Length: 406
Image (cartoon, rainbow, N blue to C red; front, side, top):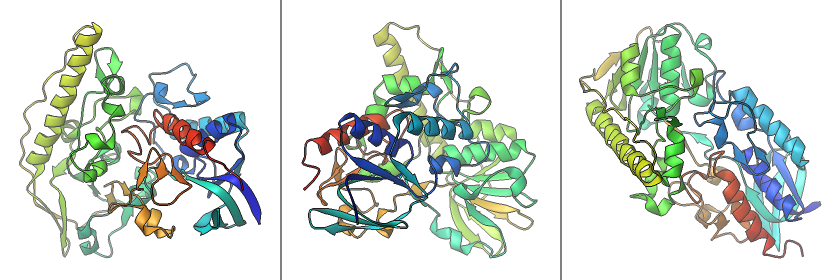
């Protein structure tokens, strides 16, 4: 059996950041990736691009250094950047190796993989912010003959059968999908939930700059009203076309039919809650919170006070029933959930929502088990290209502070 000091599971931005920090501290390690480097990015739809500006790519030793810091890298360029990053690091990554499970073994762990068993004294799980697509309970009531897919299965508008499309979920991905389908000439119904929004540009800076400078992105999980708030949507945004405003208002103006929360179907008829106006009002309240923070930062920094227009009135009427006869597909874009329990034996190491029970990335239940890249691991930006490097450094230092071999 092969032995290593530290086993890193996942070869994306989180795993590579951990590798950089471990190598810097002289710690022996191996990275296993089930697919190829940056596989989670490769699996995104064809037109996918970053929703945060290129300057937010701040991987340790792999920062964005191109000519368009305020642009938004498309999918294939993100992958190319990660491949370059791995090559620059000389990262000890093994592609095409799936980890089936990990077991306790004396003074460490044994990972059962598709390429044989590996013993490690420490394990870092860097398998992504979320691993399992979420579908609401009502999805099981949809007509059996209607194509249904999760957002991760969508590639482009042309790949869907003819007919209108129902998109369930109005976070970043759902809104981007609705916009793309509408621009392709498809009729779209968007089932909406609660999501914050804000202008793409405020003054002469991107929304994300203001969120970072205000401290919003650095807020810990304890700043949330409840642990369940970790599943809340990120501010609606898009980087397409160089970045532009995207919200329920812009989608309605394009001709997207907005409806309330998806409840399920009765026969061929989809049903929706009468809560669209409430969801819009909730998003508007979050917009005003962002606005207050932006104005505070501008005042404290002596910056010109940016003009931030109030949203136009929103007629909240919406159909509560829609016939799905003739529809081409239903796409679920309601986000993802953690999925550690499906392949790891330590059920008590994860909370009721599936998130790791941890402090600063170190499991408080399984000694020697660490996490990087998990949503809200330490702060709001823990799973982003802007913040994952900070968490990787914290975890690497914690590992360095312990004996990593017998």
